[in-house]
Amino acid sequence: MTQITSQTGMHEVIPSPDEKYLAFRFSFSNQPWELYLMPNQAKAKALRLTQSQTPAFRQYPWREPQIITFAARDGAQVYARLYRPAQASPGGKAVIFVHGAGYLQNAHKGWSSYFREYMFHNLLVDQGYTVLDIDYRASQGYGRDWRTAIYRHMGGKDLSDQVDGAKYLIDQHGIASDRIGIYGGFLWRVYYPDGPVQCPPGLQGRGRPALGYRLGTL
Image 1 (cartoon, rainbow, N blue to C red):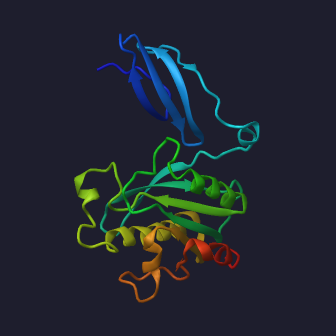
Image 2 (cartoon, rainbow, N blue to C red):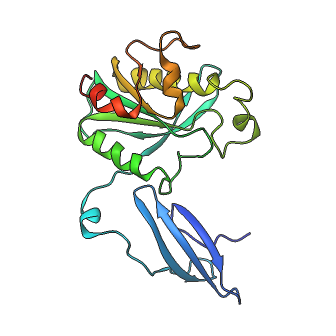
Image 3 (tube, one colour):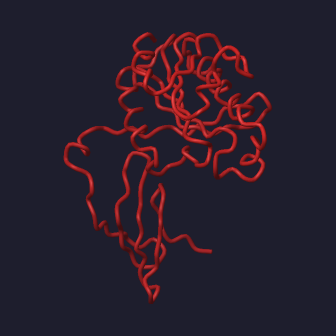
């Protein structure tokens, strides 16, 4: 097997009918999809065909989130995207994002299908927040056992992965336990005190309509 493309990121490739050329879409974590063309040869130079962003979009320094892992309570290594302010300090504030339903993979090097949330996370970091975007149990791309870990038990390991993510933020990045918020999919509704998993102090579940009010109190 010979590697043809060389850019770090995500590719969607279609060969020409004679297989001499490859047309592909390429994206990176802070660069939206663009169209490229290259000869079907190893280390060949790819020609960029499109420039889809406006000048205003390109002027903003969109962040490249760090891909990290943290240990869940059962020993599993959970992948996530981590966004950190340049001047992060102990006792800081953080937000955990719960991507929808578990049926995708978001901790990767490509442009996220949750691009609105990605842009929102950049805004949060501008305001001094750390953001953790977790590929919790049932997320795509980690094999059968990961995918089926919540079978007939939604609100189990998918939820505890969020709580363990909060613990990671507290232990590894000095985030204050009473300055963590969460938003996103249905799981935030399970974070109330009568839920099945005990949450770290101050970890509150809030839906998007109330998020601005909640963040104003952190």
